[in-house]
Length: 147
Length: 278
Image (cartoon, rainbow over all chains, first blue to last red; front, top):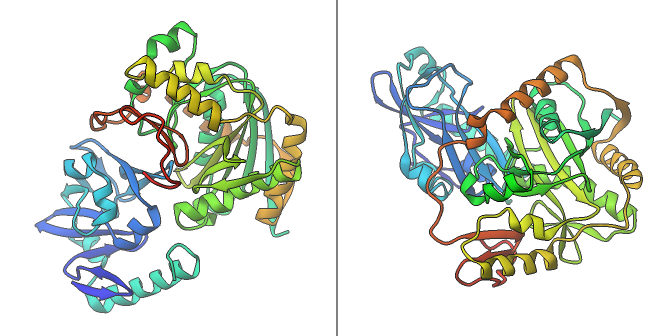
């Protein structure tokens, strides 16, 4: 874990900046996906999450989950293509846990994820730190996060 | 002015079209589109339930007896009773142009509605993030969402409101909680009978145009938007859609939100909880 701009990030994971998601590789071609700490803060306190069906084949950019906070419903979109093999029932039953511990609560597991797609994500401190510092600075300047 | 605000006055619409309208507008949005402010009034009463709410929260037999269709929307919030005594407004814009963060989206896209009411002499303010209140009473139900590449925030302004009908369509455990809910709803949810659609629409149009620094222009739906609205009509009529996503069981104790900070709870019914408390 590393402290970056006031948040703890796990640098053994990959990050998808456009979607504010993290990915961790469970085995070859199998990843778990969760919300990164900035995405969790921007969304606010989650009160519900629903998932696409287990078995669904997703293209990159397709919705794998739908979240709700403060009467606002929005999609979470897969940063990589893959088939959903599992969804996290604990997150489904208690979505507040996602807000409280975004790195500790995975949302879905995908298989058949291509290595090229994973390699296109941010990985390692030299890539993750400048992106995250910049994203947090922007969020603070826009008032999304407290200064 | 940096751009245009297209204002679509859709008039009186069927229940399903009054919901499909803003879903379609948002879904049809692409990067670079102008924002759209849409007005409509439902021609018939119905009940509308938020995307992540359960049909078990409703007395479906009562809805059927009263002839109230039940429609599920792709935006948030709880069950609401809607009818022709309400003016709907919806502001849709490309996701890329929406503020980041839910709180800022509501602040940017609902404050103009409060400003419009103030211009008409109603001392309205945004409270608790997304409620529009006057003297502590909620005067507009609001919600929002991202649909496709569009963000939409919607609200209703009530000229009259049958609190008893609203409470009758809620599934509640006993008569005592039903009476408590009705009392709290009468106390904290208020129509604005002194206002008219004719006064509200130009006030909203001006307030949103100023807030978005855009020139308001009357317009109609594009072909792409009409197609999206029609697809949403079909989806909203689909019983599978109405059943909703798979959700965990209801909590053991029934809780009904009256307005931000005011809840009716099954056991400690009627207790007021501090603003923002959950």
